[in-house]
Length: 224
Image 1 (cartoon, helix red, strand yellow):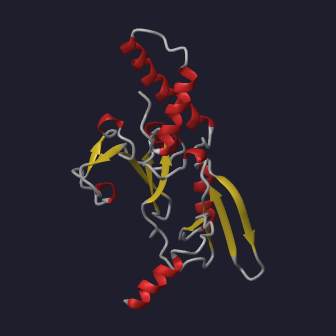
Image 2: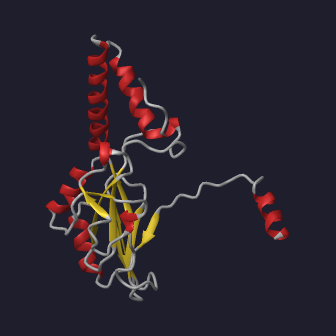
Image 3: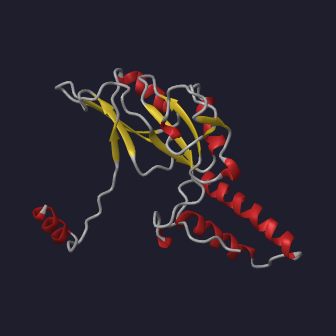
């Protein structure tokens, strides 16, 4: 115990180096079948390298993601299909679910968990997955699931307002046009309600929109 405490005290004073989670390896049984599936989702094919010794690696990146997935020959001892609850964060769960369904993937209906942790339950019990988006469209509360041909499970989760500390104010950004458009729609709706309550037009609406959209991403208090 004393050694662990000494190690913790020593490491707490060290400068930390950026360690970016960039690639997750998923186990598949048929590389070409998996490649067709992820290409069909509209994910970007970054690499498909084969080598003389039989090794092959394929990499895809979901739209707007900083992290990628890889699969190939003898990349992991895990059984094909054993990767579960891989998160794909979206800003509009209904639209994201529709996009996945439109390419023929078997995706669940949108649901919200009946209790904490129930989103991870995949035993088919409908009491754990309540149909529809979460009450009041709460951020982090709405899901849909789908699997690749091997059974690796993906979890779509709607996040509109981040928890504090996840993203610094200076790091707020939008990864795609659709993400920016969704944030603008949310800001427009709430700003319209604000103008109705005040019974006057807000000429400084651009500043309010900007403050609202940054606050959403960084988990700060939303403007009134």
